[in-house]
Length: 229
Image 1 (cartoon, rainbow, N blue to C red):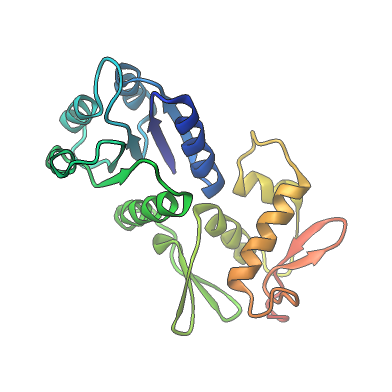
Image 2: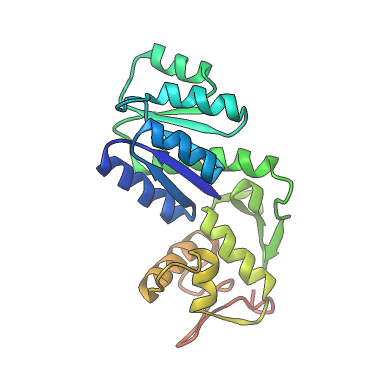
């Protein structure tokens, strides 16, 4: 899933790119409204994070132009403009959500996941639900369920869990996992992978210290063993 970030403040833009990248999205970025419109035409992102106050074309102008071209692509305004009229205008122009600056990482992640769920629910090629032991994974919801308990997942989490489900009992090496979760252009780093698996285990394993879904195969990678789960 591809996201376009439009923000003239380099620090905020880089922060959003990092947050979205960590979630598993492909990110394209623009520093001004004119570039954003051209980038939208060229890249066809799945949704857009859009600042309001920018030199040249404002976020409102960009939203109007994109809406003339595409009436459904989700747009999330991210802005320091805090008056109620600003939010109302943004929503009337066709925005799907409005995040205030300064923002916290958890807030951005929660709102982006909510938009992603709407995108995935409308996508014809959404992957069907699958299971890993007693864990039921719902890709179109970016969630897993164990009984009545719901577990939020990132897009990257879903990609990795789907790979394990497709290769039960097989040892998946680090290159396979990186290519699926991070993309073939990502430079592999064992620490990045191990940290991500560690955090994922904390959410999906009954006992993260004794994992039964994602098992470590020392010196090689990881494995999902249906008989062990």
